[in-house]
Amino acid sequence: MGSAGVVGLLASLAFATGGAAGTAARTAEGAAKRPPVQDLQAQPPPFSEGIFPCSQCHDPKVAPPNKTRRELGFHSDAEAGEPAAVFDHDSEHRWCVDCHDLQDRDRLRLANGDTIPFTESYRLCGQCHGDKFRDWRVGVHGKRIGRWDGQKLYFLCVNCHNPHTPRFKGVRQIGAEGGAGIWTAPTAPTLKLLKPEPRPLRPEEDRR
Image 1: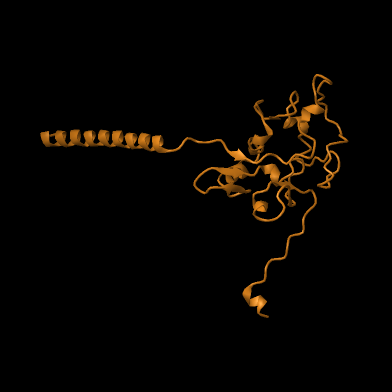
Image 2: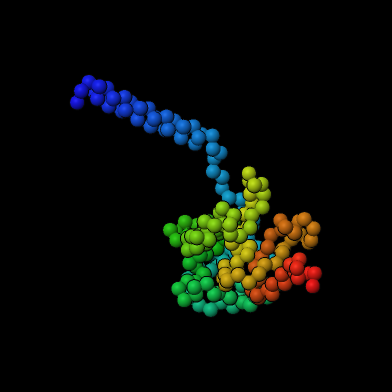
């Protein structure tokens, strides 16, 4: 290789090294400017009246926890029309303590054994329903309110789906009665399938 070729090769190497360093510097600068990742702000779960904290009945100091699978005769929600002990969520393979922590019923249990509060129940749902969890986080699935360029308040999966029988049937408002508040009021799922409202007429249909 002649002297001109050596000089050209060295120049190419210097350019490539400088380019890589510049890219790394710009990447670091961009990362420094990005705001820190914040935890999701979620609506509280729509608990049935008087049912939480669960430890008021499930107190391990009073009675040892029983993980034996059996038919339960309580946990009803009369307002939602829910009979006692409804469980239709892969019931052939799962039971209460697959999701509820056996020792502390005020918390949920992940597959790795970690426990989480009910306000982070989306982490539990996301273990099996990963595609829905991904869409929920970016606002494609479910509902969120707040600023488009700032903090948002996410509705939990359980605001629309009953975790014990999760097939979507409809939701009912709990809280604000009419007005603007109805759009931000929390919701709870229904067990009975709600009949959808008829679609609005198209302009050409309205003129007939």
